[in-house]
Image (cartoon, rainbow over all chains, first blue to last red; front, side):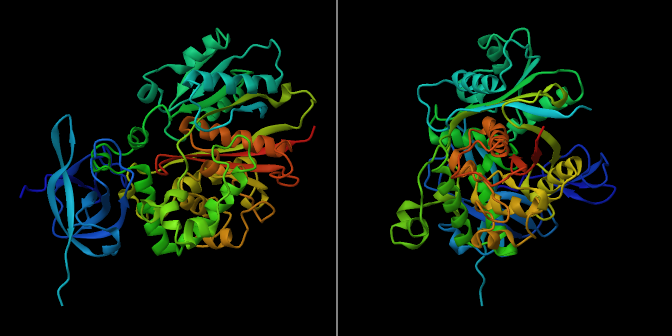
Amino acid sequence: MTDIELVAYKCIKCGKIHYPFHDRCLNCNCREFEEIKPEGKAKLLTTTQIFNLPCGFNQRFLIIGIAEFENGVKAMGQIKGNSVDDLALGMLMKPSWEPVRTQNGENIYGLKFEPIQETS
Amino acid sequence: MRDVAIVGAGMIPFGRREEDGLMDLLASASLNALDDAGLGDKTVDAVYVANMGGGILQHQTAVASALVDRLSLLPAAAETIENGPASGASAIKNGLLAVASGYYDTVLVVGGEKMRDVTGWRATDFVATLTHPLAEYIYGVTLPGMAGMFTRLYMEKCGVTREQLAQVAIKNQKMGALNPYAHVEMVITREGILDSPHAVVNNPPVAEPLHLYDACPVSDGAAAVVLRPLEMVKNGRKPAVVIAGFGQATDTHTLQEREDPTDLKAVTLATQQAYERAKVKPGDIDVAELHDAFTILEIAESEHAGFFKKGEGGKAVAAGKTQLGGQIPINVSGGLKARGHPVGATGVAQVVEIVWQLQQKVGQARQVKDAKTGLTVNFGGFGNNVLAFVLRRVDQ
């Protein structure tokens, strides 16, 4: 398992968390940020299952979602699974850092999420 | 600042135009608008060309320079305007400001796109290049995918249903079948796309919860307008139409950074600016062309443009309030859903439709009775760059 290499940016003045990078804080225009990593599990904010894929993906579908980590970082990622019908907004997911596509024969790494099955 | 009139409007039928290249589309629409303007040998001072994909899809750049040469408009100033799917309205905005300021007297604005040259997956990839390269594009997200995620949230937060989305598609394809410029001229039914056993085959998912008939087609097409100061427009053979108000606003590049992703702030701000400049309220609008690249967007934009409260747009469609003869007829052209969405052309085509509506030129079957004031909303990116115009008929 590879460490999650995503870097988010916390404004040193107002504390607003940004991902992706901005040159100035979207809240207070400050130009200085502390680099932070996403922490903990991620909560699913929204999702879709895409069937008409762009070139570069040789598969039937992709499940994509936006999730919020425990420290407030929000990011898009691919979701492991067979159907978006199995996903409920608000459910918790385990993040990982894996190849998400290939470009010019090389793997491009990014976020993947795996739904956490609740046990009773 | 001078009042600016649209003195000529032209369009070519949208669809799959195998026989035409990008420059053919742009030139044909331009000539239609110039002919409609009846300018004779008057000089065109400047040409603004809206085009998003010439460099990617046709391997052709600087199309404005090529167009003025082809149309013998030399030495007119010429620029290509690229602002994603809002390129068309951006080009009109540039023409508007140039004429309003007094810098130019006669401006041609044309928007066009040739998208059917490439396979569907290349066209999908081309449009997806407007997403954030690292935070979105690498994951394979597409514009239907962005719309799918937006729809899922909108359904959960605002109560929009698949039935209401289908009613937008049915309404707009019904109107498209009456529009000779529309790409899709096929009437669809609720049974065919939603209720019958065949609906699963007829209307497969493209980006859940959106299905095939929730999305606009990929089209070739072009549209054009000619702008002049109102003070130079003589009483003519047709009512003058002025750009009474304009607004534009931006929002975060990525959907995830919006505090509430169902809040289309740029639509609200752009339409508010346009209303204020035109000194009108949403209730004064007689006809609207909204950017329904996906059915959910017509509903969401109808709320953010002030026609309905948040959460009421879907119910309004179901109640017939947005159809011809309703409270606020929306997309009586068929919208992007049926007319098609050649991305560079769309913002101009919306304005052309409203001009023709205000001039009572669309034919009885689609005409909004006694329309005097119209609105367009051109939605760039996924709501991160939105332009709105209020057009008004001036009876001279």
